[in-house]
Length: 419
Length: 118
Image 1 (cartoon, rainbow over the protein chains, first blue to last red):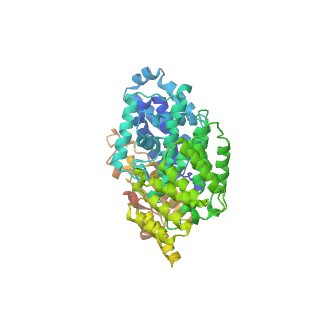
Image 2 (image 1 turned 90 degrees about the horizontal axis):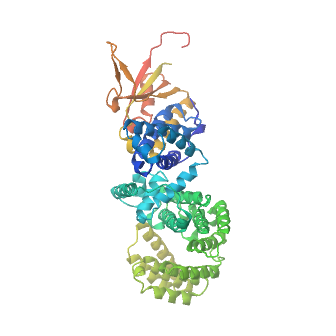
């Protein structure tokens, strides 16, 4: 009886299933991904069943790998389709077996995962499908977890993933790494997927399900994998820096009841110093003649992370960085954030005129954050009544419960000030 | 103290759709429960799981492959415990993760035959 000191690290099954799916799909082709997933599931069930009583073996990953590989080889033999597989891959089953063993070696594993990243982020798929498929295949999430994480009905997620698999199989997408001429273009898509994946997990508008923190972690893990590989670009490292700066503040963003804590109220001693240092190092390694939006967003996040307080933040620099972001990409959200930074830097007049310019923007009209921003700038100006009015307008717009709670808290504070 | 064997049946129906996360949780519950029993002294041996496939040898010496029966009736594993009486053993069986996963625990006493190693 093994003692539980060798209890499995968190997410062991999830990550092992993702590793196996990546390697076995690489060996047997994207057309067999369903078979691969089924056999990986069988192997994991077997492992769970065998280990729950007698303890975890010395090398649990190797144990599962062996079982999954054998199950899939059995299945191929049993279904007598291996001739076909051999014809397609030009290898014998025994050949494939040794290839699988080799690819499952720890130092070879990242290569299979990288190939899988490019498959999941294939340009022929829709963005949301890319995210769902990545979570399923590379992060080992179950359908219901993905559905909860992305706030989608389970049925939708299931269909989306199945359709994606079918279309990749029909197109017989190869598991090769993109060739150099395509790399930048393919990486751009991967970056966007990982960025959106991180935002899905990070966004404050969906409450505080623990699974969402997992999504952030997985996005950062995959980005890190890319950064460690030969096919990364400066933008990849900037994106990782950006994720890590945000992740450093993760715990401080919610209180013990799960309610959102605003930047101004966050306990900065709770910010994760190690992550901040690591993020800074990645940002330093991301130097490029052509900074991307990731570079600039990471630079802004860093300004917050290194400031001892809200007041001591270098708002001038943040304004400048937002201006540069706006040169790269027109975005009302950047404009909004720039206006807030302007207000914090003391230029409330300019901030208000920027916000007013946004009022004609269709995207922003029904967006309660614009009114929140107005409220904030009025408050900075000392115009409490105008701040209260703007807050009330924000409350009249569609907001989810915990944002409503946040606004009401703000309103109470303003009303107290007004007395 | 009397010894009992816990025979676990079923509890893995529908597991083919279990997410890796849930799998890990189920396993952790089992390992925690068994370890707690070892610490407390009533779990003599966590035992082992039994693979679902196997064979049946009949009186006429014919041999059948498994599965023998519906999976919910399949013996999935066993453990050895020690308890003051059957009622106490039943309480221990109730505390196992088995009922949560829809399986049963059969509690069987090992008769004391007055052997030396008793």
